[in-house]
Image (cartoon, rainbow, N blue to C red; front, side, top):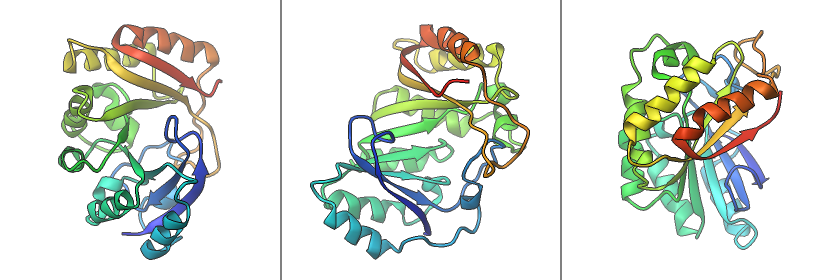
Length: 235
């Protein structure tokens, strides 16, 4: 496991808590809008495991939680031991995931190791492969993770980074219907629509943010399927 980054404090990553965010190296997607391309394959180690735990031990009482992000954290074979050590220090743990490893997600929840999960729902099923930059079939693994979260097995949020070239009213409507098919009896709990931000660090150049009007339209489309929808960033 390579810990490729540490944000020592954030008020945004974990709703209602003061947290730090740990970035783990490695991802199995190649989303063209990804801001963390340096984490995809062979990022250098930014902080050692023991140094991280020492930092967390010193921050007891100042931080409430630790967010584990990436990359895709569930790819790491040593993820569970790390989470156990963090939990042993008294912290709540939030996991950011793309949902591609549902067995790992379910296991960590079953062990009582996760307090909150944020899953990136990249697009409608038909547009998934294009959005994650991979030649893949229908996103069965992501559907399994999504269905699990919709069952309220753990507190969660869903989020989509909206890119003008990748999302449309049709794909957002299909995404909403996907949520309803997986959870027909109750709406999804919480959904964030995140406006794409163009940076030098993105994987592919030439993409654009949606307009504020477009984000508002997408929010309205998802409203029948989600209890709480929040827009992050405006075009």
